[in-house]
Amino acid sequence: MFSGINRVKRYLKNKKLFIFKNCVNLIRELKSYWWGVGDLPKKYDDHCLDEMRYYLMSKPENSAPEGQKSVIQIDKERRIKKMKLNKPN
Image 1 (tube, rainbow, N blue to C red):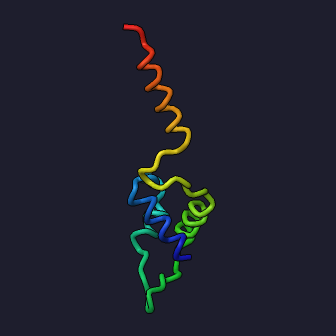
Image 2 (image 1 turned 180 degrees about the vertical axis):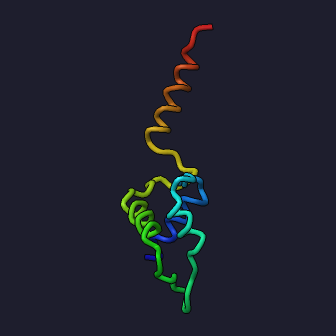
Image 3 (image 1 turned 90 degrees about the horizontal axis):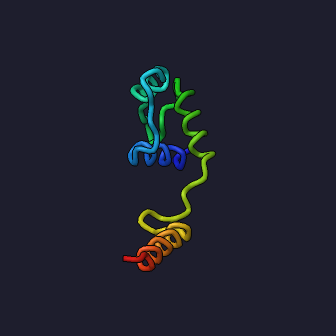
């Protein structure tokens, strides 16, 4: 559960998840979400939040760490550089 909550936080913080104003139940649950005793979230009226967490946990994580270029990106940059060098003046 905590890994799912952390993933939701990451998506919201990095602006990878957008919540529209017509998602009234989700917004209501976000506003009323609170932590109980012992650093455990209070499990009350959180069905939309659970669904959002399940959805985000079903998405694969980006395997490349932030700032690290993928093999495809490196190859693309290499080809662009080569094209610029071979471009006739």
